[in-house]
Length: 432
Image (tube, rainbow, N blue to C red):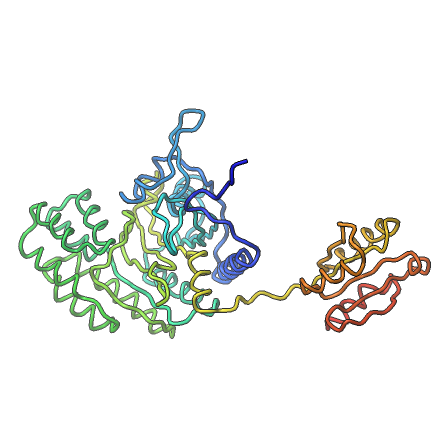
């Protein structure tokens, strides 16, 4: 028989890691409820044309695309926003706005596997649909900060920019959208010289090249100073100036609301997705080079998919990357210790009663296992002790005659005979 392994770029999650993943998912879902985001579930498989429309060259090249048995070209979703935009443009087009939508699940990209980057990965996604105001942009930042705090991550920081700065310069210079997208892809990979070469070949002016060089160098933590420098650098480009002003308004509102987080402002920051129109941001921790989350404003995507012109923005939280960061920082997951009970029949004749008792206990909300391997009582208790099970219930024929069982406290290593009718109360009472 061949030794089967996981497909490259895919992973198995053993119980402890699966538990960490579920913890991050649970906190993400709780946060969605606290902020008023309603959950939607979209398909893993979507139309290739939908996913390719504005995803960006790199993602288009790395999608798991194939023809189904009906001859339709489809793909595994590489991100959530296109699916949510489709949903809003079609089935939810008449819903009152703003809409706050939340979704969670697995995504797929044929990336080169490396630390923090896999071909199957998980995200919690928040989309705010129907507001062009700065307070909506601020909410995405504040929500993301809230999630990082609730998961006890340390020393995290935001990288924040605005694609309107770069797009404003390039559009005024007559650079085509296709060329702009190529430039953004290169900047996303930090290939500044290559990006400038594309700008030069597009026929842009020397003033444009000089301005872009200044913009690339305009970065730092004092957002008021950085944006002042950015505005001075782009003063010849009206739309770029407006973008700087928009970013200033968002950051001032966030600061004035009392929310504090570390942030680096980069005037030349770009993300690979082509649909962004406004603020963009990512979060990082020192221990991991890849972003834990990322998002931004996309005001034209829903219209592109056949909906009404609708402003929107969103942020995706990388669940498995956050788990990696928590492990790196040795953050203990805040998972309640589950107190388990094992029911052990003394012999075959006691098995039916053991199963009956386990059903009764589960009905009271207890986590219960039944010994099903035919082991002796001593071996079953030894196994329960190894797995830190809280209580064992030993079901024997002598005790059953009097409607009783033996209740053993595994930690204290003490046991006593209790009436079956009092069993739930006895167990719950011992746990306080």
